[in-house]
Image (cartoon, rainbow, N blue to C red; front, top):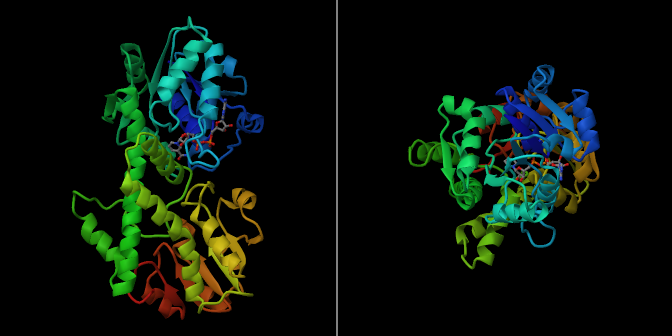
Length: 437
Ligand code: NAD
């Protein structure tokens, strides 16, 4: 199968590399010339565990190549995937479909034979209809079918997720698209990953409903954590106690500083906009968005409270800046609001992140970036764990207590316990734990 992947970001590059690993012939296209030049030299434009080796292996095997020339990538392709960004539109929160529609028009001009155009980007319901209309308008004689195949991979575990998905959702409007997607995903089907065929519109809704549900689960446990702090209960045991119920399940029940990242914030917002346009209120999702927005800044206030209510002239050290471990992605990371809240109160910020520093420099101002956790903590008036990277899970707490100017540890991911911290002489402030409010 010959595949063109339009957009070589977190989703396009991982999907393209995995498809080529299945044995398909893949050309990854991106209009960002620096990205393509780096990839051609074997340098990954993003941090994703295992990606460099996977790309190198398939480039060497002659199955994976890169280009900035969309027409070259699309020529002769059986399937053309659109994996460009769909960020929040400035001002109103709708999904910005500029890149998707531009890609659709360019694809239409470049088609050389029959093809299925598959939208992998997360797009509001009805976008597939518009992609199809644009393609027919631009290339009335082209033999094209348009399908929706939303992606569910998680950054940081993207390759495993792509190769061992819980399910593959394919929204198709005809036999040809169905047969083609069956053929493309056949290697996964052999692993018994359910390939769920639906209509195009249903597939588009599935992606948003899934993300909104997960965002709701996180926000639910975060509010329960606040209640636990207030009444003297332990949210981690509550999570365990409810998560053992098969109807609930243990995942996405870790209380923390609020969800962030490149998907949940923008996708919940875009779903609300669709609901608003349809005059079908989604009140639960509305609350989730409001509660989560407020929470990120509230975490800044939590740090201030742990530092006896005054951070003016004080230094706060942050560990972890990315929205989750094992990625360099800073988009909508809770660290951004937490840092802003602390700076607004007059604090100086030092920070360390294993992979996110380069991207963090582009979104954070007046932050001193350090080379390791201890360099960040040295002389600071409090240490705050924002992202649970593995290398923060076994810190030498005695050393931390020794080098901090004030022995205060705020653990927004609950990776340490009150007892461990106390043994090292640290005053401990977790999330939803007894005595840590
Ligand atoms: P990204 O910003 O990392 O990558 C998008 C790429 O598309 C960029 O490199 C950009 O230069 C390129 N591009 C834009 N227009 C183009 C064009 N006309 N021709 C060629 N290249 C073009 O975005 P991402 O994180 O990979 O997300 C892509 C889509 O997948 C979004 O809709 C997102 O919501 C969805 N998604 C993302 C994730 C995730 O974890 N990042 C997971 C599931 C779904």
